[in-house]
Image (cartoon, rainbow over all chains, first blue to last red; front, side, top):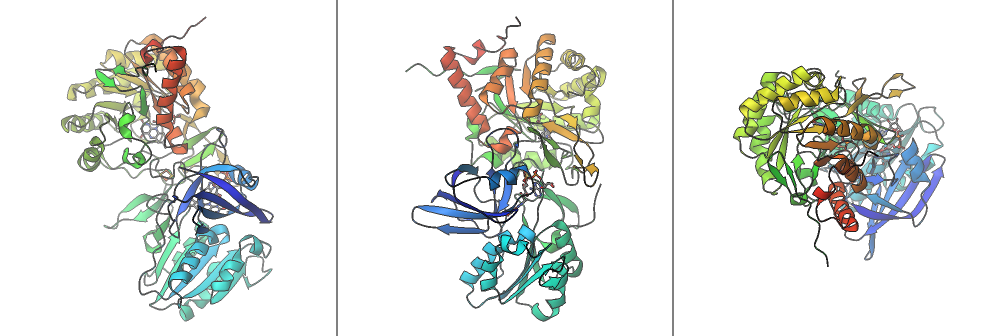
Length: 271
Length: 307
Ligand SMILES: Cc1cc2nc3c(=O)[nH]c(=O)nc-3n(C[C@H](O)[C@H](O)[C@H](O)COP(=O)(O)OP(=O)(O)OC[C@H]3O[C@@H](n4cnc5c(N)ncnc54)[C@H](O)[C@@H]3O)c2cc1C
Ligand SMILES: Cc1cc2nc3c(=O)[nH]c(=O)nc-3n(C[C@H](O)[C@H](O)[C@H](O)COP(=O)(O)O)c2cc1C
Ligand code: FES
């Protein structure tokens, strides 16, 4: 566990914030897709750490900095919003699996639902840095235009070849769900050198699976589940996955994920 | 410099370096924590519940946080005793910490079979018999509700093992002291308690449970006063050692259990929030003993004054 110091904490639009945390330089360099567990309160209520994707990471000689993009949804994130410069929080080291960019890939498509954009921002920057000639096609879904600023889309916009915003209420961009916006374009943009990366609500990823099922497109998704330990010990954070022999098993989002190959995820509800 | 207090405790024929163990299901198979904790510093590690064959467990959502606690319905997902013995145990043994295997069965035969395999593999220090898991449809808790069935499981396991047998009791028992007496009479070498307390949480928008299984087991600080009282009640009824479990976050919590007479304690949910919780508790107990001028933790255990 590392002690992080709050450098800045901005609420861009109501309910969406970006917090920058300073860390000792020994903090391991995270890979795109990984997350950290943040302890927002020293007492017992709220009790558990909360998982957040790494949205950005910089290193200087003296220290490292992590940026988290967050949406206020409950008590923990409410506490995150109230953190001020100089406050200390305990965070875990970067955990979980990372997005994998196969060697031959020259174009990446990012499909984000709301704050699901966070790990994709870090992935896009990484890809942009290492594949100078690579192309980034970004699709971001939100309920309404107002969220656009909260989701720091401008960073991604600058490095994307195509940038599509979809709003459910039609206030800007594509009218409808982000998966529909993406689906309209797939014949045009997907070829053998394309990989798709998605993060967002389960329903969004399920919709993506419904038309990318044939497995021909390399697609990785970052899944969310409620977590307790974030280190593989409690088996609380599972999703149903296809095993090698066609069997079903429950994999842990925190250590077997959060990044999974879309074709391994099982969508039928079990009881 | 005064000498460090002696933290050693004797428990059912085992000598533990200190009274602090991990609670089953909250410390994985131990390895997960090896980067955070020098496992050899712990009194013992109790591993996740093991059944004869691997178990899939319950669908998500499996956990939800509640006031100062959490509900879980993991449903005993585990790799099965064979894989544990072949793959996990050899690696775990290298850490040089006593390993206690938590045994679960749907039937008495399964409890016997799992216990026998764990005994024959010669890697475990003791068995903890889980007759208290509330999150499985068969077995577990159903044996822990009444003294008679609890005693039967205990006696059957005793027949196939020469390892110390710890029976883990449920707060759902009709009378936990009755069950405690029965398992003692059936040959249990020690008793641990409590397992989680059944509870529920409702999503007011969907009007459904916030867990996949309607109910789950409550753990964490919220259950400590209840658990402590049950532990104390059982300590007064039996003469075998009792291990206190439930809501232990700090050395202060652990000491409360030791003072009422628990021979050892287990740390569960606290591991999730701070993977070093166990070692901090050990250090805290040691500090307390020094402050009180006690030379051994044994000078504190069972010193509760009722009036
Ligand atoms: C791997 C991973 C990465 C994540 N990255 C981000 C991120 O970059 N930015 C961000 O804003 N959020 C992220 N989340 C979600 C974030 O963890 C939850 O929003 C947060 O834990 C809610 O805490 P709270 O106390 O505010 O809400 P609570 O009061 O605990 O809950 C409020 C609501 O949030 C839901 N919730 C609680 N915990 C989780 C969880 N772990 N995952 C999904 N829903 C949850 C609850 O079911 C409830 O509906 C991530 C989750 C995971 C698993
Ligand atoms: C996620 C989780 C999984 C658990 N799995 C088991 C198990 O497999 N076997 C068992 O006997 N107890 C299991 N327990 C119960 C704990 O060992 C312990 O009895 C209980 O959580 C109370 O202690 P605590 O409040 O310190 O967590 C589990 C508890 C949790 C929270
Ligand atoms: S959160 Fe505990 S196993 Fe994933």
